[in-house]
Length: 178
Image 1 (cartoon, rainbow, N blue to C red):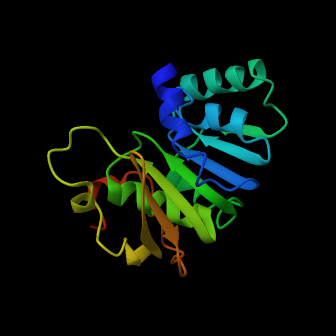
Image 2: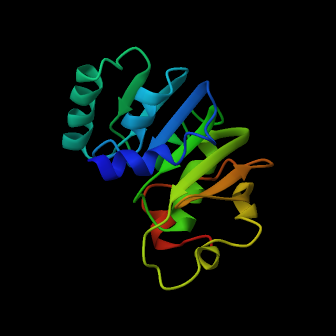
């Protein structure tokens, strides 16, 4: 667990102090739960499509005393991207969510203009991390690359995201944008 906490701490220097943070595919709660504990000014929305994991996250939120500012939603990110949360996030985090194209397509609609996406890059890729992302970011969803923070890749929403994104559940994986 300590390894996951240290990995999450790499983001402390780049995350906003307030606003809405969204974590895609929250699973066991890393990095969102350690970051929620460390950054009391941020509200968090943890998105986890698997009901058992979402239920576990809800219990963890209660046990950590984060219930007033951390919510868990058991839903696909593609669906949440078309909900009232659309365009409201200051930051989105993603660790082991999916390939870059899927992560960008699901995250971009959740961000407000200027909001940032921080994606944990897998270790031992064999190829430079920059080869996984378009050099200027995925412009089709209004994203530009801002750089690295430790083992995290940062992108910023700059420009509009078409209403069609994210596409319906499963399509981003089947037909990636890049």
